[in-house]
Length: 633
Ligand SMILES: Cc1ncc(C[n+]2csc(CCOP(=O)(O)OP(=O)(O)O)c2C)c(N)n1
Ligand SMILES: [Mg+2]
Image 1 (cartoon, rainbow, N blue to C red):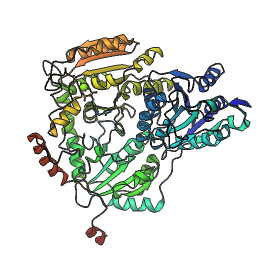
Image 2 (cartoon, rainbow, N blue to C red; image 1 turned 30 degrees about the horizontal axis):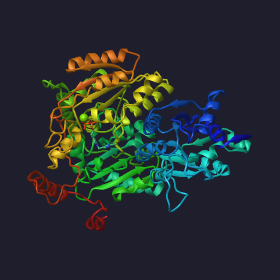
Image 3 (cartoon, rainbow, N blue to C red; image 1 turned 180 degrees about the vertical axis):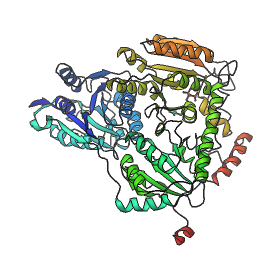
Image 4 (cartoon, helix red, strand yellow; image 1 turned 135 degrees about the vertical axis):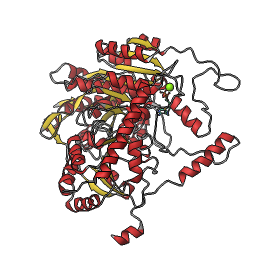
């Protein structure tokens, strides 16, 4: 078949399928893109042809290249990584705008295929517009910046290279241990070059998503440690969700009585009111999970990468001789914290463990303790939901109103600011896909664009889900552009825009570290800093100008009414609510390691440094069971 490189690439993408548990479907839902001279006549032309044939790859116009990667991530995460979008950009700034998106995907282990245009392979006309010339090598372009943030990176300098690059890209995208951003840089001249391709390249190809089983010896060792545990705790991460292991987790926890705590990506592994759920763990954890973590003798990590938020910067698991058993499909994560590694799919691993531990169960007092602690925390949550602060509500009340007016299958989406921590602790998740907080990269600007991807995924799966995007004023200002895309695609989102006049999460952090909220508020500059009046910024008017319906509210009662209206509407609706940033949500005493200046002229900094030093003493390296324990065993 005689096709251009771009036409061949698009035809190949159309024929890629994945299969898991007997379910087979296309891997690419479509291609998001913004055109410029680096892709308009190459990939752009190929997508135009695709739009004119049955089953051709669909094209979706985005407003910002970073945002379109977020949309692809939101989609792929909602689809448990079994389906995603490709993203095409021009060269130069269009391409580098995607670098942050690539990092977001790779940190979160979410598959996205990035197709940045690249400078001429032939170099006849160089430097092309937007080419950054690197005097030390004409082989370098800005697209080399994708290398460290991609799990596979390639540049197609000759048409003949395309087939092997495509197969390598698919292997990585569909490998649960390897997956992340895959970047194929496409020089703009090569995209338009034609060649005779072998027919086999365009035949349907099915990639089976592996569910590796644990190795018997590793399973036996893990079983022995778990059976010896008096105060075990499961830390459920994103891997539980992607592997669709909630039922297996429920079964394991119910049979053994081991309590289940959740990371940000793992929240929703069990419903919040499951008898063995103890909620969020770590720096933004519940008092229940964090107290159990502190005293746990065996921590069973399932599908978690143990970020510093999960381990409270390695202070959460404080018991002498605490051991870790890590069930993870990626060996890299399974070996963390000197754990006994169980390299396997989460669902298969949990099933194997459930049968291997036999009649093991925690004793009744521990079980009662976990239930009591979880119940106590739930009471604290209800109180936080029900406070009626005046004149402005607390953020926790806003979360409560959204939670209580949403249905169990609806999805809350968030990424950065003070809301992710509050949601982690306070959101009552009732559906395994009901909680979608991007906290691997905590990328401001993910919220609306990511929410759009979540909604597209729900629509494609014929699922009736409202998507509640919760976004701070800071994140909104950084990237609200995809409201326009949602309007253009007639995809409905409910956006709850929380106005608190600045980067208040960082303000609170700054204050706690003795830096006096420096640079965190949105105010006019005066001679002494940004401490003048509040800015006359009207984000409600801004959202309206982008084509969304807007409802501005002042109280929680008004918010509840507005949320009802937003749900009844068929259009994307932004609910604007102002909150009091000085009303923090309830929390556990957990710590987060953010270093404070060792010397300073400012008293508040010196005091914070002294406090910092105290916390540092509790930080653990987790290099393995102590020598004494090794001798005993
Ligand atoms: C792209 C990006 N830049 C900077 C940060 C650091 N950061 C984390 S939260 C935050 C402030 C967010 O402000 P807003 O959305 O208003 O939420 P609030 O903190 O007020 O709750 C900043 C600057 C980040 N996470 N992402
Ligand atoms: Mg804010």
